[in-house]
Length: 276
Image (cartoon, rainbow, N blue to C red; front, side):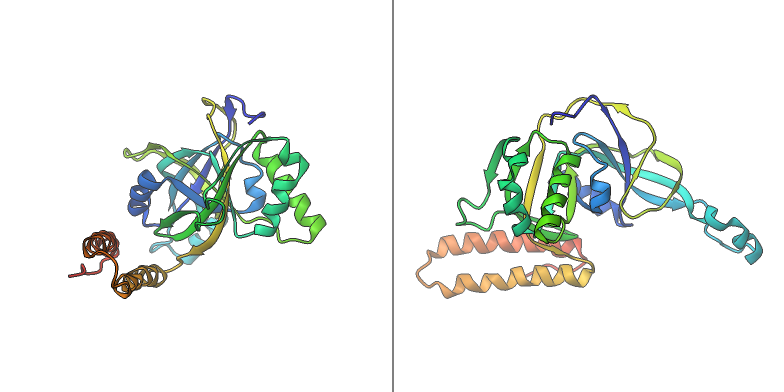
């Protein structure tokens, strides 16, 4: 992280309305959020991101149409109600093995690799599994680089352009740094999809380690139906245990009990009845 200083930027990132379940999951599993590639270039290791939800100042209500029209762009103004913050320590590149293969072989990358972890154990495993309310994926490998995020993305874009490969699709992430429970907010801000960079810089402690993660099998749950289908697929996998008559009964019971417990927890969170 050769360009990281103690002066970092701060950003606003709006999430959905279901922020209570978001915060609960974030505390347990950390945060990973999709952002446009152009915005990812503006974010550096150690930047602080405030996860927030948007409250409009002006909702229309029973005001005459003349007043509503007069408000114009001011109708979009509101406050960013802060939920939690995180420092950017992870960059995730989704489902682009051709690009990442060439990226890892690039001389500009090779000379800056400080650490690499293969989560697939040489290809024998699918990788590190991550399952969230909004989606799921596997992390095949994690790489630490002595490069800032802008340099990393520049190399990826350069390779994609020269080789005719699809550009990277990016998530940023990190661990929850702070939660906000007293109504803290940033005023006079419009809703935007992606990041809203705040003016100025702040002095922050340097982060100790950052990683570029190669993501495989990314699936986004856009609706509750998608999420419930994923849970039901996992439940269907339990049938495999009954197709192995030589399996020790105690081991089968232990595995099934654990799986049922996990599924029950997810069903409760989604308003479904428990398994009997």
